[in-house]
Structures are given as C-alpha cells and as structure tokens.
Image 1 (tube, rainbow, N blue to C red):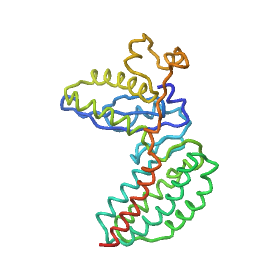
Image 2 (image 1 turned 180 degrees about the vertical axis):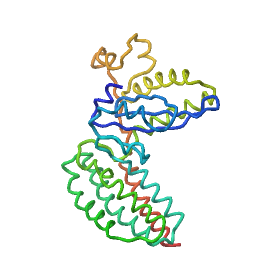
Image 3 (image 1 turned 30 degrees about the horizontal axis):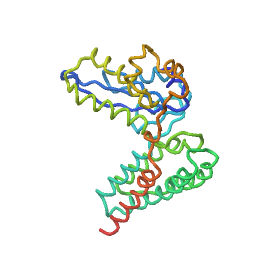
Image 4 (image 1 turned 45 degrees about the vertical axis):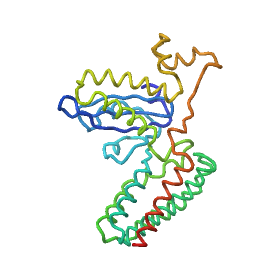
Length: 278
C-alpha cells in the first residue's frame, strides 16, 4: 500500500460482493507495478478517502461520484465515456443532437490517440491538443440541446471538464482505468470460486493474498517462488534477486494496444455512421 500512496499515478475501482446474504464492497488501488485490495461495508468510500488523504499524484477513476471529493488531480476514464456515448447512439440512432455531440468529441479524441500511438504518453507531444479541447468545451458551453440524453451529456462534460484531459499535462498518465479494471477482474474470478460463502474476516484474508498475487503478476514475478522464498515484502524479494534472474512483466497488458486504442475511438465513428444509414 505504501508504494501506491507514494506513486505518481493511482488507479481506483470498486465492485460488489455478497457475503452470506450481505452486500459488501471490494476496492482496489493499483499502478503499473502494485495492487492493493481492501473491503468495506458500503460504497461511500470513507476508507479509500482516508488511505489517499495524503496522495498528491493523479487519480485515475471512472465517473463514480464519490471520487469527486478527492483533493488531487484526477483523470476520468475516457473509455467509459466512449462506451456510454456509443451505447446511447445505438439506442437513439435518429438523435441528430447526439450525433453532433459524438462527432465533436471524436474529432478531439482521435488526433490525441494518434499522437499517443506514435509518441506515447508524453506531455511535450500532447500539449498541442489542448487547443482543440478548449474549442470543443467552448462549443459545448454555447450549444443548447433539447433532447434529454444530449442535455445529460452536456452536464456530464461540463461537470468533469477539468478531469477529462488531465493526462495532457503529465508524462505517463493513462487516459483509461485499465490497471484497476484488470485487478477487479482478478477479484471477480476469485468471487466466482467462493461464491457467497465467505465472511467479513475470510474475505480480508482472500484480499491480502490476492494483493500479493496480483502485485507479483504485474511485476512479472512467479507468485509461488515468492511464497517459497520466505520474504514477506515483494520489494525486498526483488532486490534480493540477481539481475539475470529478475523478471519484469510487459505492462502493455495494463493498457490498450495501439490497435485497440484506435478501435475504441473508431467505434464512435462506426456507430455514428451506422446510425446515419438507418
């Protein structure tokens, strides 16, 4: 946990779990090398706020409102937003206002993604896109929508205006929440194993072990070898290994490949084109 709190970027996500008929929540904090799970009785986020109260880096999350109260720079997951736009456009293919909004957003995001594909998440290459972001925000502010879904998206964009493109101002800050979502999927697999038969105490033991297991996986360390080593700290274990025995994972699994990034953005255009043919 201490490595995550000191990190420049932290990803956060949460999911629900049933424990003997009672609803509990599991939270995950992650970066590119470390993962930490913990549980809570509700989804109010008091514990995660306490853990991150001294965190000064960039917090990457979805649009769950509890994260809005965090006093640190934030980046909202743009993939979540793209999926929502695509889904609503599929549901309302004749909504011209929504098509206009989706088209404007896609025209901003697509060049940014092309820059990331070419240069990576480097501020010096991405700051030029802040002009197009500003133009989109100004256009959105002066545009009056009538349909409920378009009005809703305008409010959503304006509410999160300062958190949608934070990554343009930093090096190596992702525009998606993949690191936390991969970790949540690991817990989801474990949840299927124990079903709803665990207890509050039992789930805490599961989460401690899963935190170590996923941290090892993110770092490319063999989990079984770590357990057999006698070490209780992953950092100490890594330092103990001779250079030729260290194995670090390719963290590309935690972020979309160039092809999938382009595909995610391209989906907006494809859905828009399909709706126009209806």
